[in-house]
Length: 312
Image: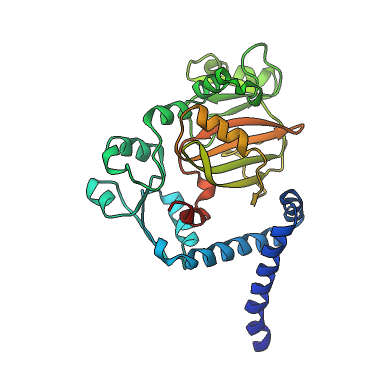
């Protein structure tokens, strides 16, 4: 038993190395299909990714950073777990000027934190991750206005249909919302009656519901009209009509994103710079954008440490 326990960590390292090597030679889509087969495969892939990224972070000791995150209790543990054994020093504090000046990188975790940093832009001009302009924050935060802006710039075919005679199912969304808390799936006349009081309210709008049990969140570090680094998270649900944030996924995993060029064009068109999270679905091999969150996305928290070496 003692020998087996001693060998197990070594064997695990070899498995991680083998998986990382395979990732270089196998098409990303094929690797994603393999990971969907079994939770153990997904676990090996995730551990291999973290081991590889931690190793890379130690290769560049001169890039060691003091990083200040704003306070967000739901994210702190995962962020700390991700930075375990990394060379960086992290802290979670408020953003008074004295704190901002004492750190190499400032990372706001909420929209209010982003907005507060816009009031002291002179202190964060050299922040390795740009803080989006207030104009971009407000535009992305209002899903209806963002859709209208993107449609006017030629991206309408990537957006679920709005307006006109509704066809079931459709989704009733609050223009400014968090994690789908005020989104409602309307599948028949009876449900339509239940939500009739808000269906015509100016704070709400409706869209065709894009069916499918998979949804994606692409975390993007965007600077000067270019994607500096990105990570895509796949959510698998046990229903064809999930509302992310309300329905719990069966699993999540890191996967390949084939739509980065489209997202780069969208972000360029609205003048975005900084860190964002883009939610989307795919139906009949066609991309449908659900929203662009101009902030740190929750599913990035455990993996954010891997972005640091791209902020130099």
